[in-house]
Length: 341
Image 1 (cartoon, helix red, strand yellow):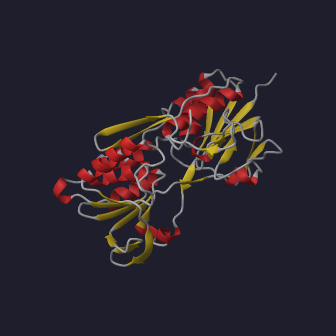
Image 2 (cartoon, one colour):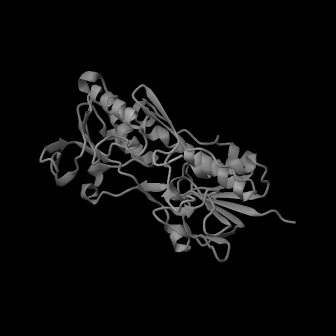
Image 3 (tube, helix red, strand yellow):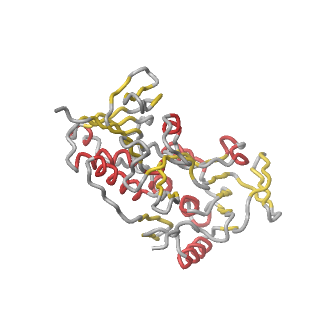
């Protein structure tokens, strides 16, 4: 009897780890990974840290370059998928090629949630999701520049920390963080950690404006930002990180359940029992009906392992965990701030 064929769609952390998990858990059938990126799957956490701070940073690959061939995983980089082929079980590429699958794992990641008021600035406005974004930020985070960061979540604070450390103390970037909420990292950290991080950034010279938002933007020699409070800021560099927009288009066109993410159960299974999803593109429907997404490196790894096990009939629930580096501090979180148990 011929073994089934599994196709992985996407080139992010969860995609690479799903391939590794399937092989580790004993799957010996045909295994393909399709990605629109030309890089081998690489680690995203360093993009806001070492990729901005090191003199000659290198992308850190999720798996060694020789792993793919040694484990008989067919890697298709720099390709674009036209349709998933849910009804035909034939993945179709924009170049006309089609590939049969028996099971599918989708890990297409997410884009930065758009902020039209700032997106109108074009190349003077930055987000951080890919290696190219980090390279662009390295070029503009120069000494004594005024940097405004919108969003005091994990990415916003990591970028604030990196921006202040990019040059000597007397020539550091002048960093201001604007946050709509009343605290920093409100979705991820308990109040004592929130207070600690606020103080830590302030001690490093970062100005953090809570309960505030941008009302108006004027693009000139510097970007002029008028806040709800009435204050006006001048910026050389504007960055925002206010959440994600899941790359769910292929799933939506295949009539899978989506809600700013591909809806999955706790085994990472979609409404189609042959299709699984994980990482930032996925959102889990809990037993109480609520939808929940944990946007972290470790969650991508966990869901890759869970999906691989579920494909092979071995569900594997794990507890959410993630980490963040800010200055010399390594912060580790376990559990769910919105959970009750």
